[in-house]
Image (cartoon, rainbow, N blue to C red; front, side, top):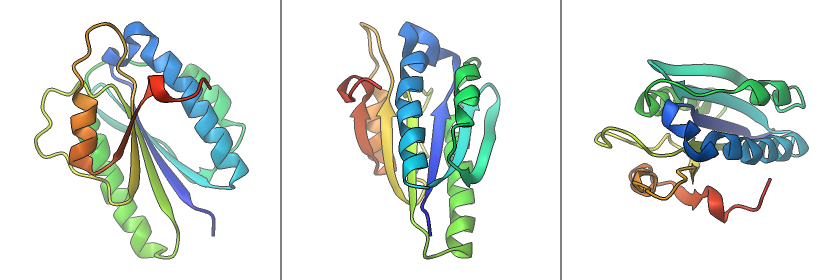
Length: 161
């Protein structure tokens, strides 16, 4: 049974700073290519404006994600806590329905949240990719990863993709 990769992408206005979202798209394209090679299924949530938006629900990874990724933009506030809550709810339902399936979560964010209170993990192995760029960095993504019990890596530490 192929695994499901749950990808949560912060597309708030702050991710446009210093080309962070543009650089993150390279990482996401490499991630989608890897999912395609491993025959993984993808569930994608974006977080911008007033809430979380589902983009894909457990579909097979495919080359068709390229155009979606190309048009991915950013704007509005940072409803990442709502996106993580939605991801947690969805994942719990999936794990009950298919307990033998493997699940993995990747969260892409600059961590620029107003508050970190109440942040929890989503319920599976999680990687948080910090895309905060520029000379002045708040560094909240590292704390966010700690609260989520997620592995942390900064975009600068990833190979160019």
